[in-house]
Image (cartoon, rainbow, N blue to C red; front, side, top):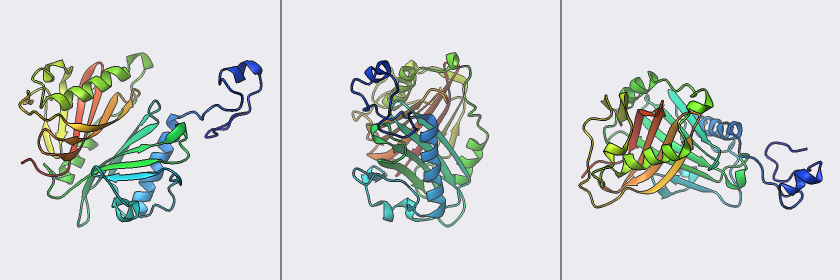
Length: 272
């Protein structure tokens, strides 16, 4: 019988074996439960300021902080932080999760967006921790204001399943948002909700559909990495904000009832 997390399974019938092509060679399933368990282990490690409890891949692991490959033992995870708020989403197709957390106390507050990735659909080990971490001095940074806005949001799972936005729509919306700086038509292609709220650092805008860029830059925002969660109606894109100056950036968008409900941005650096 299959055990969750196994790479190989003993299948009890020839018909079941044929579904795998080769007997005993089915890859593990990437489950929502496994992804969120790994995200929770990351949060526990951050609270402790130690990576010792993280099950990191011993053969193929990468730690990236603010778009630069780094030593995990010298990065943000080496320092304990009191986390005031956190929220995670899961992408079983890409076998990845996205976690946002806020620490608004202490001498160096942070707002962080982290994507965690797993190879071979195996959520029992982590192959990549990829963080965008904004702190004092970064664009529109004020962790207490950001915390106040995000605490009021409703991230209830979208139910029934038939009401959830498709993966294709979520990716399209995420890309269109980042394309607004280079494509004059991108803003009008996004299904803005009339009650949409946008939190850029600590700058709050409602509704989202006002005061939008409409082209002007020749540099597209690059290095895009996606976590798409249909149950939450969300897409997170970690990227490099090349349109305004090579800044490490996270853009998260939530779609409810076919319309954009929330936009969150975490940007490291300043414009210009």
